[in-house]
Length: 400
Image (tube, rainbow, N blue to C red; front, side, top):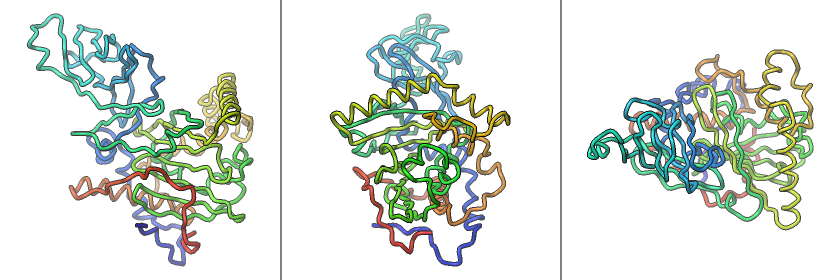
């Protein structure tokens, strides 16, 4: 059943939602004990790429304002446990992986993948059974490591079928120095490409050639949005709750279907994890894979993106001076637009208008859910479909 959209009764005030749409400061804070942090811990979330750590090695990661130890057993299976050893709080990631266990570097206490202490060289055998650290369920999908960081049994794992289908399937990730909510909202900010990406590879597919009409509705899986252009072409974006955004390739508007999770590292930075899929086969698939590999190789020869952005922020160059042929030009442009934005709640209220239709809806729905959790009232049971159709049918009168 189609849920109600944001009302569009005229006249449309340009500060639409300036009160309740900005009353979402609690959404920006996701550390342990925060209401948004508690909410997001109820879901499976990507926390790393498998290739982040080699088999038999460990590393520290931070997710939702909390540090963890990620390690891979000698067979390559990933595991996630507490950051600290229970003995004297030495970080476990500095230790040694043995089989599918990790041994603390300091005094040799060893833990299995569930966090149970299984060996303490200087102690009686009975002591180890009384000691454990937190261990978290993990699973791998297409090269991404997903973890359940909440309490009790994890929910069913949800994934769109197309991201397991034959064709091109790739993973990627990047860190952006801004609150996750800025990037999540950017996924449904349908007017910014005309300005931020006016000079970019988007020009070839035409999604930045004009300011589109926009529509957004709440669905059983999250939010569906559509940009409609004057020539009838459309760009479809979806927010799949709680933290992922899907951009569907329609009539060549993108290179491939693109599913991205905006995962908070802390309240000032986040890591985006991406699954990409293209319905390609045979020679076409081979050509695309070769071009994709060439693109990644080219990036390694260029000045690092972070250095380029830092130079822009120091006023040494303007973003328009950056080489537009860089494969990461769109990411650089987004960094310039977002990385100096303070988190919501630490900046003056946004003045939201008709172009922000989907952002307003996203804030309202997220706020509704975290406040329901805080009040102990029922939460919406988000159900991802097996797949999502490329076309979103929205009546013309629903467009802003």
